[in-house]
Amino acid sequence: MKWEKKAIILRVVTAIVALFGLLVSSGFAAEDPDKFPTRPITMIVQWAAGGSSDLTARKLAELGGNMLGQRIVVENKLGGGGVVGTAVVSKAAPDGYTIGAITSSSITTIPHLRAVPYNPKEDFSWLMQYCNITFIFTVKAESSYKTFKEFVEEARRNPGKLNYSSPGPMSSTHIFMEQLFASEKVKVNHVPVGGGAEVVPQLLGGHLDGAIVTETLPLLKAGKFRGLAINAQKRIDLFPEVPTFNELGYRRFIPTWYGLYTPRGVHPVIFKKLYDAFKKGYEDPSFKDLLARLYLIPVFNDSESFSKIVLTDYESQARDLKELGLVK
Image (cartoon, rainbow, N blue to C red; front, top):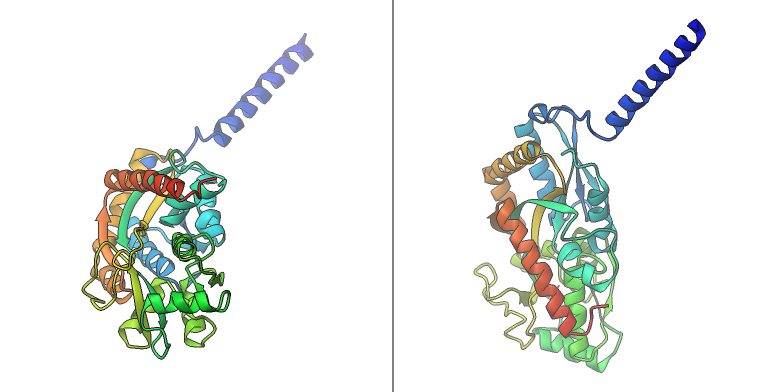
């Protein structure tokens, strides 16, 4: 009987240990939200180091980390027009220790064109929007193309001769330009890169005939490049000489914003801590100065407003792409 009792006790103890392990692994033993964060946080960036999305994310990581009292480590996860990085965030534990810096294409556009490993409407919570992006189709200043029409006409005369680049394959701007060239029935080769920072030296070196990335704007302002058309609702004060694509007869406009987000399910207390820290980072003069130097337009939207913007842009892109016959 003594051995039987010992065996029963051993089984009970084993079961309790196993149950405790299960509870821990299931997240029931997660840290106290009020004590968050107690270790470094990871920020996933979709594009290559050195581009405007990377630079702004790193600055917010620095400022937000200072507010939270923990280091925020930036990791660049490239590929698929931002899909790879977005998928990493979607699969992360909703504990606040993995967040993302996002551009619009991987959420509002690409999911309508091909299968992606996440649900744009259900897998994420949207922390904040922090800017809008200015995209200008640009050529070298000494280029013979004075207008976008001249560029298109050269492509018509010499199919496949000209090439251009965008922030990356399947990015919103890549898809946008392909639609424009298709409407003109011309073939212009797209050169794939991992981010806008890689485009500038290629355009300067004559390896590209044109480009549509934000990283060209400082050199455009300095007179090294020439702007042929801008993706905007109206001309902007910084480059008043550059016409909009709409003015040129292309009735298309793509949503282009940067923001921060998390996996869905982060504890409200933790989510608010993150939001408050990054909002203060956004308000810091050094961040506003960085946006100005990158020719990005400061636009702040809180979690609720940003969520509505994402959903609206997702639905509007679905309609536009369906009308163009591009939805699979």
